[in-house]
Image (cartoon, rainbow, N blue to C red):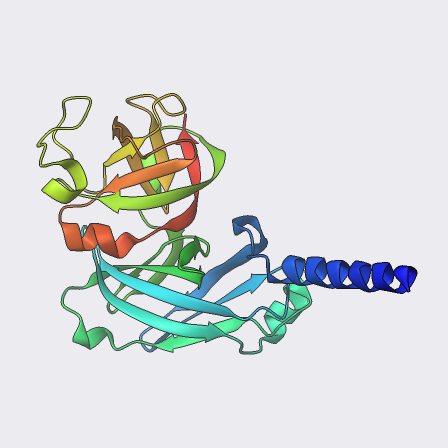
Length: 247
């Protein structure tokens, strides 16, 4: 009887351990994808978890006007469509997504398009930012990539990025950064200065930022990106993004 009880407990422990492994959230490194096309009617791309190909990805597409860090439109999709081209590339074609877009509803002519896989309230960047202009179509080159043309890029790995602004809630109302500069959207970031000293330039999502600030809660592989207003900072949420050192 004692052996049977021990055997039963061992089976239960092994079962619980297996369940824990199966439910463990996907790592940032295992989720891949990109935008493959932006045209006058729709935006398409793919997203998959290479560690669990049955894990269907929820995708958020952010539309931004050129020169404005705040998205003007959010689109959601599920990456479960089939593509023979994707099948040929990764041997699993059931990870495409597509969303319709009516550009006439948006003011302006020049836009940036970004896509993220969303899992457990975390955002995983899918490929590069794509530029789109009404009438001329999309460019496959990363938006603002020319900002790093003066130097080479070195990957620093995946960081958790968040957003902040100059309000009382985010920065206690201080008008200047730790380095004494006036913070600017699309330029200023806060980082762990023991890892990224003041003045360090990094590229995140195709945009080049400069470390000008620090925060008590920004430690290790974490970066806080400055936004012009609180709503935009909150909308950034927590994202898992690859950070490149501009050398």
